[in-house]
Image (cartoon, rainbow, N blue to C red; front, side):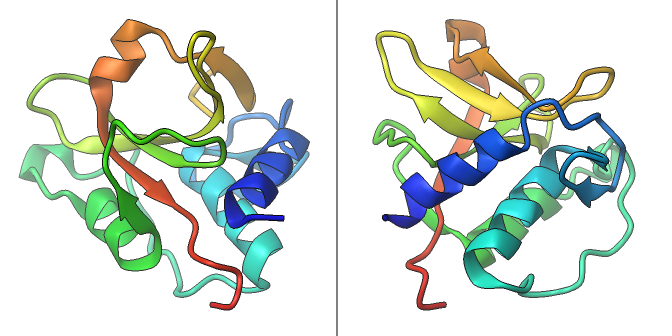
Amino acid sequence: MSPGGAALEEARRWLGTPYVHQASCRGAGTDCLGLIRGIWRRLYGTEPCAVPPYSADWAEAGGEESLLSAAGLWLRAKPVGEAAPGDVLLFRMRAGGIAKHLGVQSALAPHARFIHAYSGHCVAESALTLPWERRIAARFAFPPVSV
């Protein structure tokens, strides 16, 4: 199975996990980064580095693109328009803001969808509607499993 297929399969196992800031435990609690971390652990065994504590605003006041930078280190960047199931999507929640939300593409157009964890909700699958599509700052694929 491709890394994208395995990532999507694992993301689906997290559906219903409650939102808990900075957590990454399937069934107990996770945030959007925790979901990606959990998928990484399932694919590769261990995380590539320790994740330092982070605020819910991802240092937005300072304008640091820490999540985008980290994703660029460990995931394979793709053109935003080249969608595939299992891709990691990185979103800007407002124009000019830093990229601070993650999800996993679960279905392609015409009924595009993604799986994500967000405050006040559990891990859920949502329609990748035009308002969400406009917020995509970057698209990544998990690297081959031989990492």
